[in-house]
Length: 449
Image (cartoon, rainbow, N blue to C red; front, top):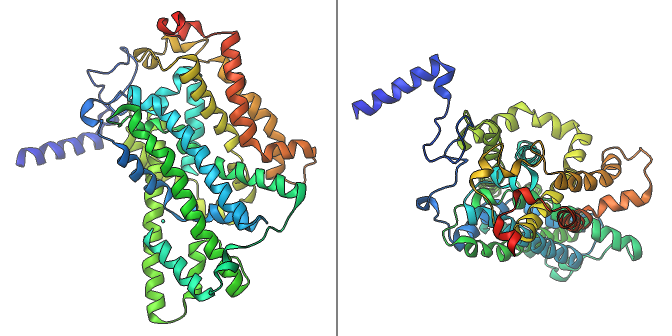
């Protein structure tokens, strides 16, 4: 015991006196060549850590989806003028459209047990993959029982269940169609970051890719349940108070001024806070840690990167000023999904159609390996990515500053960008690779098929 304490004291003293003491040693089993930094968090994980089964992926998505955000996403369609039926169908369909790509993008991790920043190199190139990693990191840095109890309380008080769940649409005709598509697109885009970096978690799969298929059902089910809870509260708020209660936090003032009401509000607020913390850890800080680690693996582990995310997100980016005043900045961040959806589609097309699931694992860690392409950039993914980002830029500009004159067609195109970017980039990338195959990076077995 004394020896262990002395070792810890010596380690602390060394780190306080020398910056080199913070450097992370390279694992002897690392696949990275000599001179290329790496650490155990970026290396493929061993069998002893491959322990996740189907239920573990279900539990992961409870930590990621059971929160205030999922609640409010379900209410958004109703608040913009669509009906209750529209809202439920949009959230269910968007959950399916999130679940399937999430499983497919997780195949690289479950097959090769590598994190997202390494997996992306096969389709984007050794260096251009950093663009996708950075895009994910940017988004990272910038709650069932309690929810059901709240819904039961307000529904019983409202009394009119038919009125609660039959909120009519406020628009019709062509306006209804475009609003439906735009709301579906934004709802689906809201969870694309977790889809993109799923290999950070799927690499822990014990039964290969089979175990993670539980996600395909879990994601739409949880999203739909929480949409119904949120819709019940919005409908009840309209019946009772003639106002929209879009967030569970907004319910607290209606719980009365009694001591019991204040106590319940306090307990619920604590539980909501814990749910948000759980979501931030699983969906933001850990993926951010993987992303930053890929840039400086000699100095940053996933743990250190996660702590850095906390410092940047909580203080460095002064979020209280952003939320209170920077409307245009928040509008820009909400539009950032136009960068993410093509990345997800490119990864799926590349792994399943172009490479048939076959990768050269050691070359993913080598800056001059077969995934270097030209200057570390796969021009096919570069062209695909920025082509679809480019056609959405006018819409992004209009979203940030509506006073800028933009043709209505480009604005409508941006509003349905999930359809355009997801399907379009998949087809374009596949066509480019079919016409100009990336022969230098393909496994010989694929070339013989």
